[in-house]
Image 1 (cartoon, rainbow, N blue to C red):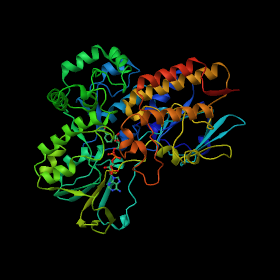
Image 2: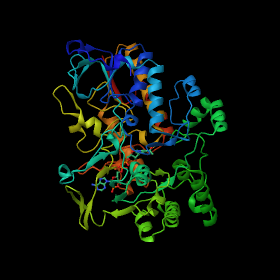
Image 3: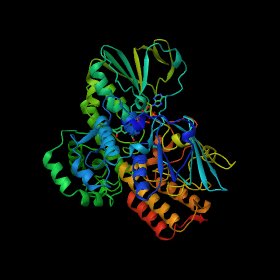
Image 4: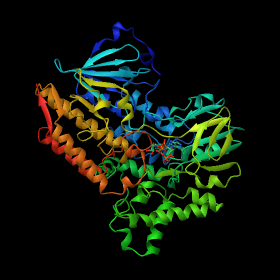
Length: 546
Ligand code: N01
């Protein structure tokens, strides 16, 4: 960690005027800083954590690993960077990805403009001077014409408000706020609550350490084997030889990941044995994208999806020895892929261990935490440690926590009381000169996130350059353009099976959150084409002014 990062300037020295303020020092914020610097802008990043890395800084739970392959899940903006970096495994784990992000921060000398340990508390736009004033919990007051929210999609961890949580005498943890020194569960009685991607990754590893592990499952989730392995040097070399072409090819896929030939057939147009052989091959290969890309219609046709869902249910039944447990683990309430499809290493196998018990909290919900553990409507369980793998206030949580307003107008949280509205997921009408990286209404979490970040920030950089070249001081979407985009995002989601699942895509994991499908699932290609056309047409749908 550099000296510059740790130095805490005094309050007076911190009242500064910049060209752009970036909120968040993860993959989005760091790339934003790099891009803004290339335009000659003076920018500063504010980051709440004590290090850069965002998601990969906070999520240090056992088994934390990306579900996109490491050769894909990295920045594309600098060919030397992608040629030089060596990923040791097929999928990067948390510490490898964090090391990569720190390497990027050093290599591009980003740290001197990143202020750590600083949480942005408010951002207010003064229409008289067309400037944002951002305040932080460290007393900073910073002004700039542009504010870029790189606040992340899964950055507001959520611990359910269980009655009695303060009484619990053991230790509790959340996957997204994991202690840096790690946690040793050896010999302990442990509960994991939640079976999303985080739970599915940590459960096999905690089971190996704990005296006994109880997994509290409310909704069974589909998971596929990741088939992680050490990086194959031949594969790495051939990938690197074609890196630039592969990145370009990725931009022509729905999710910005190259190497998976587009499906050509409906699942219903092939005989059952051929279909199952196809699923079997994908299961053996590992990875979620390739599995869901087996046929054209797995995410739009329930009957087609049933074939894939049933294949995976049968796999669960074949792996888990106790058939009652297998049936509980086999999801029946949503089509495969409509909640984030998990990738695991020995997840279902873990339920064959003698020291692991699955607790169904759908039929017998958790009522409260007690001094010694968890009480459900079916009984009481004693624990030394409880792990909440209960997810995040996704996509809007981090933005709603900041007091964002224009003049004396309503806050962004108030504007979004009935669900987030944006134009292209990039900007919000009524909030000029504030850009969001991978905001709701953009493909974001339905793509390779780093590619989505780069596409957004390149668009934002071009937009800022366009305004500055023309001495334009202000940009915001028209109400009409925003309404039409929101309608389009909803129409596209409604043409798929996604709304059939109660997922964080819909905000349904947060009590009281409006049920609105947040990511754009029309695919990256049409989305980028729309963004590019909007820019080429003089920022169509936006109001630009002096
Ligand atoms: O969170 P989740 P996550 N009582 O919201 C349960 C990314 N990610 O941290 O489904 C009992 O998916 C909840 O149950 P239900 C990835 O995009 C990626 O696991 O709401 N249970 C669910 O089982 C992912 O999708 C990677 O009924 C409660 C779980 O907690 C996203 O982050 C790794 C409960 C939450 O699952 C979020 O994943 C990790 C309650 N009161 C994360 N409240 C990789 O790249 C919630 N639950 C591999």
